[in-house]
Length: 332
Image (cartoon, rainbow, N blue to C red):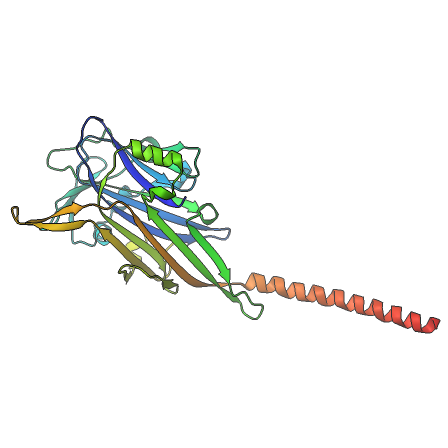
């Protein structure tokens, strides 16, 4: 089970209105002395928040409350960061508490970036299947007539040993080199229901499904990492460290953002003289490999100690055999 799954519930379950959403996912890692942690940043732009009660996100690994962080409050403090995330030249207007209004432009209407209270509005549902379900309470958010588009963004952090969708393999260890090559395989999926457990599938089928208009998937990597990808078009750019330092903890080196996207199919409506969506997305998947070098000075040190130890053992055994042979010859 490697797929994230997204659905929602309504305040009025009898309402047949379908809700449209676009998703933005950033994936990046941060290292410490003990382990490597991965951060999954999920952003959800809901076109009409009215009548939505709960947003559910199944995460295919166990999540703890302390590993969830609201990012709405982070990006709301930096207008340049807003433009960087959405790749647009927006202006913003301070709204009511927890709200930042992003003013629209000629092609896109305005929307609200909302800052969630993680302790009160995000609950973790423990389930029998591997993983956790995040229940995000949107029920009490005031939706005004002129601004129904809402954007939410959260961060989920986990240790690499707990994440099955990422496989980090060590290759090419040598005692003659102080580095080895890692091959990291990232199998990222959203709404790949077939790969989920019966319990997750049942919860998804009982809930309401979003009409997904677009999925933007950004992988942030060290500039020295080598990407191996065979799939749809992918774009890339160098991240500006001064701009992203408040968003990415401890960024002190050059990073490249690799951008994959999948959008719903559109057709031109002659009557209204505009493009309309005629086929929404059901799911999204991307398999990407990265190769990177990692220092092995500690391993080399262990190898040297091992060689010295084996040499010492060999010397002792050699002396013992020599004395044994010498004794045998003297007896004859």
